[in-house]
Length: 613
Ligand code: M6R
Image 1 (cartoon, protein in one colour):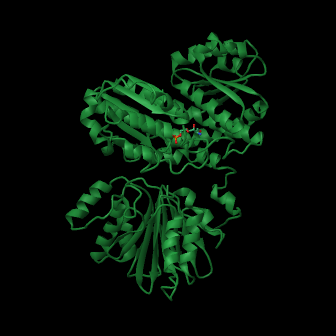
Image 2 (spheres, helix red, strand yellow; image 1 turned 30 degrees about the horizontal axis):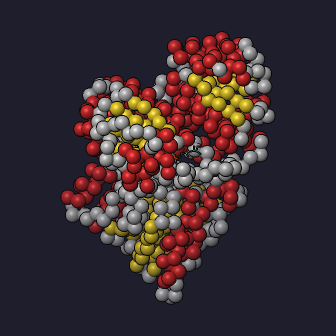
Image 3 (cartoon, protein in one colour; image 1 turned 90 degrees about the vertical axis):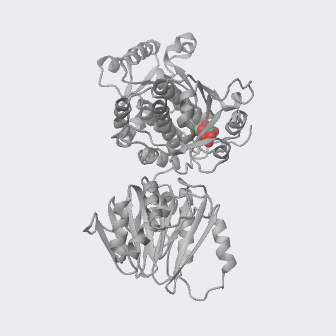
């Protein structure tokens, strides 16, 4: 997830673009850059770090130029391919072209190899630079700019919002969209482009939301639009949001926005990482594991908080798919225990931020003794720099302290890792992998469908929001989800909640149950687990508890008798049930917290990244 802005008109473009990037900084902040068109020349300025660093460069140059630039494009980056360095920052330039991109180009390695054969010299590690070179190569062949841009987009596979400038056609910004948001803004004799509404609000409320396959040629007075080659018109809309609401995508809190981001970011995390045709898992970043996978005798997953719950799910993937014994440990415990592992052990640290001190300490303990791998959301974070290998999740910046979308991307990344290890160890046939992958591609759509249960969750939250204690129960892969549901509720609503394996409840916690204790039961479709959890549910119901069932099982009469309310999410596959069943729990925590009037995005006593012991 990155932030993109563009301007073409008659005003000074610099403050408009910097202001736009500032409004989009929540989308990425590891580096930023601008390309300004001044007197037929394009000037590119880039800086690493927060936007303030880029602003400093322009402040130092203030007064150097007399003529303001009246056209430009800008970018604030959240790295996916390549470290957060100045060379990897956008815009990327090639000959006449300056280009910025938000998204992931899946076929960039093959495009890069072919462009290198044609003599292109690459400066960065990014996937984006291939688009700049490809566009320039097409222009050099004599194509008119719009046509060259169209052909470049056709050659690229993946997700993108592109903004490109051709030095030879000043006054035009070429825009394209596929699976990544981009919005055009209309003014009087000026046009704006941004990846999100907040960047446009100080200048215009007249917007056009581009759809997948759209290509636009934007100039000050005119916007040409086509979709997959056919000229089209798109309806202009009027935005009524205030700037703060706009930054949250119209949602009341970042947490809710991030819950609703999940279909997109889970799709981003799996895109380009496997082939349905061959069943191959394509994770070139894990090349060092290809040969080591055969000799692995043990895997240890370490993390904290929500990431630790993702590890508990990861254990199922690694043991069931790759057939390697796997343990899960709290990073804060692991680091102070004797390290009884050897070079045939893989230690995996899972972290959204990549800065959690305990997880960093754990990976440092393992370094040099075992193989180390980080599953992380922030490119170049400390944990990534210490580990031997990194598998990135593509959740984009997570602003809310309560982790939601990062968790879902960790689950899907760990599933890919389990399949990758299974493939390299030769313990799962291509057909078996293919059938799992065929289900995996439906997950983003299933998440979108699961998000539709919000009205039912609100109704359940209303009846439970005054409770002082909650119990969350689940079995098998639903047990980590029970833990996660309880953690989310505790964090943001300050209500005591416990997650328990459903079968363990009779060994103690059942004593707590009475009519004041809501019990949330996570019940998956799997026949054995369904029946066993149902028995536990009956034990709870018999003791007067209010029972909320979250399930992906088909309608079952018995369930209706024992549950006070039932919330159903779509079923995709046994492995992916937990990801979908977790969504109503995230929403339940959110709505209970809102009803109790807590500070949802910044809950008391908590920090987004815990860099102390
Ligand atoms: O950045 P990390 O994933 O390493 O953070 C780990 C925990 O601090 C984090 O998951 C914490 O539990 C969240 N607030 C959960 O919502």
